[in-house]
Length: 227
Image (cartoon, rainbow, N blue to C red; front, side):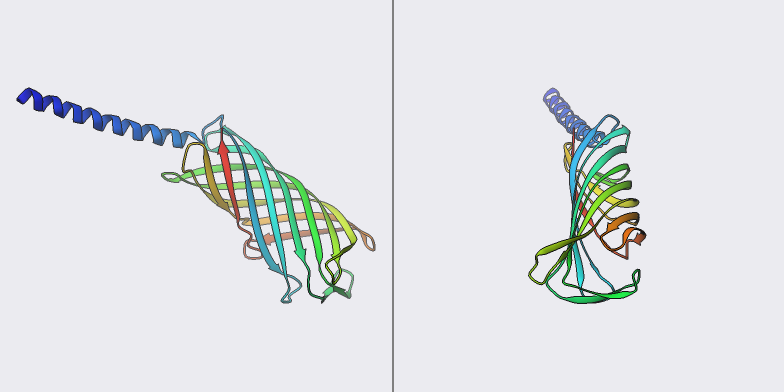
């Protein structure tokens, strides 16, 4: 009877050890997702709105950014994003004063499309279990087109196109539910952009913009796959 009890205790102990080993293995695999040599591919999108020219009319924007990256070291990744964004304001006639040309302009709205490339670097910091904090630095190179809209919504004229470059710092959080993928949330803490446009009336104007998070809060949500 004593031998039987002892054997049962051994079995119970082995079961516990196996369970602990399995949990440790799962934890190791989850953590190993962000190790050197891992490749990530994913997609993020963002939506934002901001007031224009201190009036009640809002500008809505949508951005979609596919990305691919490679972990050069544990928790440190370098990669490239491919940027597309659309900004649109229409449906209501409004007037605003353009400080650059010193006159009042009437418009029904506009449509602006941006295409660009954005190399980035990102570093992850372990927070708790499957949660990671990260900081990301981006450079950006863009080509944009700006078109006027009449009262029927027709795009009747391309006012200008411009090429520009910029940089931004973007903190965020990532949740890793499995070893194969993660979901994330981030936002631009500070951004800088230098544009040089070709306007049909005022060609080759240069403009620099610096924005903080409170100026135009545009959160970004994304999914990354690890392989």
